[in-house]
Amino acid sequence: MVQTTDTAIATTKSLTNEALRRLAQREHGEEELRRKLLSSTDNTEDVNMVISQLKQAGHLNDERFIEAYAQSRVRRGFGPLRICAELKEKGIKQEAIEDILAIWQSSWHSLAKRALEKKYNARMRLLKQGGDAEKKALMLAQKRFLLYRGFESSTIQQIFKEIFS
Image (cartoon, rainbow, N blue to C red):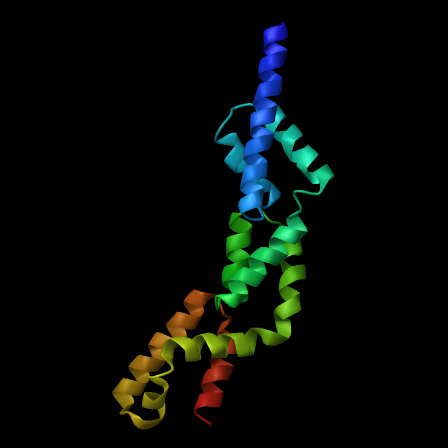
């Protein structure tokens, strides 16, 4: 029986070390970290205990993770729809996502415009000078790009109205 207790302590310690190693590399959400830890063990009780200890110690915080993740994705030119989908995939609740994304609510237009200019800067002149077929093809490509990046269609429409007015 002593061996079983020693094994359980060793397992908990190794899970804690793995979790701290992962958290030292970057922030993780609770569910994301739980999934990763469960890939190394079948003991959900140990994983839940380690998660609980990390939360109590302040090492694991979903709000901090959401904020860091969203800031990282915004800096890389992604929009609210894409960021929201990625965070949901990582096990974050919709309410928490909406609270954080509301911070950038007034900036999505300028962020989308910046992403478009960064990708298509040299070809933007074609929209004003080129033929109709070239313009349409380029516009479609740009709209698809912004949709892929996760910007709302209303934001994309506003940007193209500005370009052509």
